Image (cartoon, rainbow, N blue to C red; front, side, top):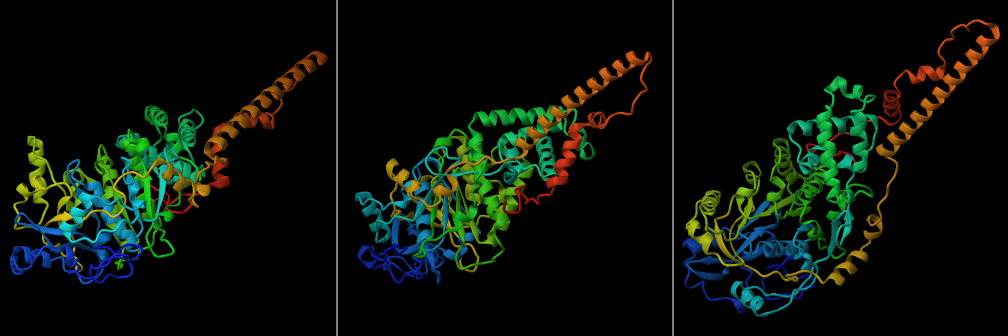
Length: 562
């Protein structure tokens, strides 16, 4: 059981200063059902509980369920040092997944670990406010020997591009990269490769892609008569593929995506902050306003994770993570994803552990997560599953096969669990899987519901980050530079045509005066410029002025902070 942030919780065993227990037997004896005399320590329940008797700091999940009884003296826990080994919270709708991630997040915050949560339904914002006592909460606390105290967490609220309440989170198109953008635009493999080629060209020519109009301008130039030659040596860009990309961008903009790309670009290091008293800040991304754009917000969440992966240094194994990232509605991330995208997700999840970041995927069944990604998830909290249809029964059997051997009949147990109950297995302090444990979970100590709108707005506007990110900035980038060069080229062409016409008229006048044709003159400098391909000259001049190759990560995100 986590010690509350104001140190008012008592009777739960010794706790360290970070707010997580460091004894496996930390149980409030006043609320304990006397099960120790009736459960053999050498029996199945005793052996399961022994697998969770960690010596170091740990988060408390709840009490063991065995043979139809809740055993409050048999506590189920997760070692704090293993939270960077990733995890899965799964279960059918209404089984308590959101409350589970809230329970874990508030204990992480108390333990000094920053947390990121995606609030898709708008019901997680209450994590920053103290919970409300009630009969059901009191009963749950008695069942699991929890000394429940209402406690809120320090938090920040964000929104995608300022749509909905929250501090706007924006990315530049350059930073977002071609792989993630291909996913959100639903491009096929060939189109994805072509988009990568467009980014490569923009990178090498120094054309900054800040927003979507910048990308549109570069695509339009590269398929114009003047720009086609620019990519000819490295494969070129077909007009058909460019048309698909431009149409996808138009549809994307119609969904309001224009708001999400631009500056000031969000610095993901903001997610790693702690308060003066050592608690981790809980960053809540408010997504109800974009619920109807699932691919957009799921891909943006992946950008946040990829950007962290790019910027954070290697740290190896720590006594506690630097950040734990909860990826809600995870199935949306993988739906319709290309092979390259899935490979990038797998590699990012595998490698980001060594940078001190843990990732929890929250979804309905483990089958929503690709096998290669699922294999990286060491901690499992599986809520109830339903078996109403043949597909449900198949999913149930597949889920059972993903757990270690256990004394439970998991196929029966997973359909009989109540709300707020789950099957748990985690990694022990030495990295080995713990025994499978049916668990009645503790009640979150923060508000289990949305924060009132007025309170949420006040929290957003009072944040020191509001002034930093609230107002969009539109500085000169690819669109403005290409437009300016096009206008200048048109002006030069008009001037050249006027000069040529003037020269022609002068020649005619001279011919009339002498009675014979004037000698043919060499082409003027302006005429030479007109015949040289103005737009190719434009591209070369841009490359000469600002050209640089941007180094990109496995996800195509820009490696260096802009």
